[in-house]
Image 1 (cartoon, rainbow, N blue to C red):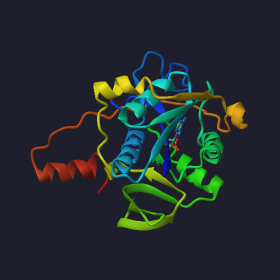
Image 2 (cartoon, protein in one colour):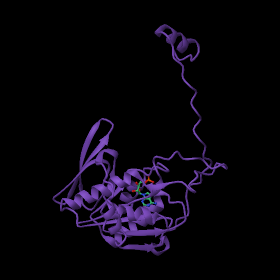
Image 3 (cartoon, helix red, strand yellow):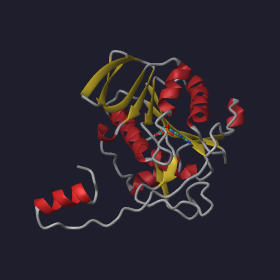
Image 4 (cartoon, rainbow, N blue to C red):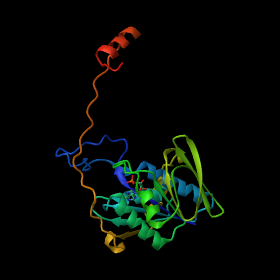
Length: 249
Ligand code: AMP
């Protein structure tokens, strides 16, 4: 069974993003970049399925700048067998990414694609769903558990009221939520081994996808700062302030 895992290079989740002075976006020059955290979870899940003997091959895919190679090497150090870099300087919006992934699915013929539920840079939460739509495949989004049995993926999903389990007939799309697993750190020997694993490089044009953005960003601004709080001495004082100053009761 073959699994594709799309991994996006984003600003590291520990970094506080800075908005560019002209308000056109977020500064990425000289900023630490890493694999999108939900994609680490997706890679980990694929590797665990391989360790269980369910999966035989894991292919990591990234669409982006040449530096996305680092993200693919990390995926391979975690356990992916090979990778494909779809090189572009364009902004990667979900529909264009989903179209590239569809073309690669048609070429690679995987049984499962595991994506992150969302990329933490643009918070779109759309690519997995769009890919399922374009392929006409079943989807299990926000997965907190995945089990493969008898040609089906049993996916437990985190929904408002609790946990829902759906049975997807393979091939299928799964998107990983936070509690699916805890991704491993790549060990030094595995980082060294990953350098020798194959990385194919293609362009969006080779799979006939136009990356021209469909969305135009009107402006990007920092969130407004919060005012400092104060301590009150009694419940009566709190009620008075809520009534007379905040005017919320
Ligand atoms: P999004 O819909 O942008 O929130 O992204 C959801 C998921 O789609 C991510 O967690 C990745 O698995 C995948 N994805 C989105 N953009 C890219 C990209 N440029 N390269 C590889 N995977 C991507």
